[in-house]
Length: 400
Picture (cartoon, helix red, strand yellow):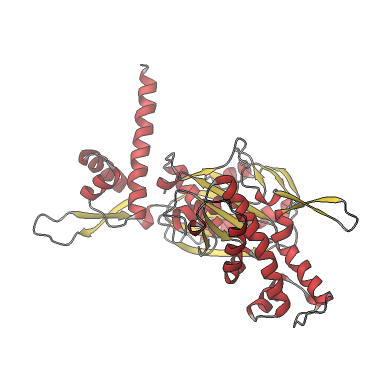
């Protein structure tokens, strides 16, 4: 066997073993070297050598001794929060967000800028200014390991925004410019895929090998995790569930295609409220001042129109999730997004509708959770992506 192939294999195994240790410490802080050996299946000598290396690189540090049990006490190890930092950026049609995180995923700074336009130069200038501000906020001078970006739309393997309907972008490639400007590695991925990545690392999907993250806002998308890995499809575009199509007849009896996105998103919510107002349902809302914010506030106040509209859309969400159960045989869902999180009070309606349309499999196994990651699941996924690029492991469940 050629020497260079042996070197490559050894290097890959070294990287995988380091990731196993870091992942184990992320999930189970304060472990001794002996416990790490049991958790990872690595030999004691391998653990000793690799933890010494990770301590030298400041990724891991010693934090004291385990409680006494009569014998020699082992030294406890944890991830070192100061081992590195990451800058995360999220770009969608409503805002640009940026955050600075330490090595254990703790956010030290976050800022959101609402957008008044989606023109490329305008949006990218805002993003670059936020990144510069994040760098300035790194007061402890912790090494910044990279920039992770989540953007709405179809993203190529090279980080090019191939197409974004709501941004009205095509073939936008800012990655080389940013890498040159900031002298840092930049990764770019779909924001919903990164949200699933974030939930798997830091949120409601940490203990699940199979789940689907669904983000509902002005659009609708999903990140599908199968066997602990993010499923992205042949070209990396998997998860565009907003374009799942159904049909319904119009007033003339002509069959018209209808997308799941158009039945569950923010524009649909506004349209549904307008319809109920025109039908004369009593409400505190006024048709000339309907916004997402006013409707949600009214729903929280149990306004009849806002509540009826949310219930109606919740049924469509349930039908959509049932279709995903029938397609992927996955029973666990995490819902996020501007509108998605607002469906939580209507969970019973969503589950009831799912059970009407799921095939014979056990309905009791269905789990629908709502994202609680702060400040944003996609931002946390971008953080995880930066650290993943530093120490990569094939399985999503063992990436830092």
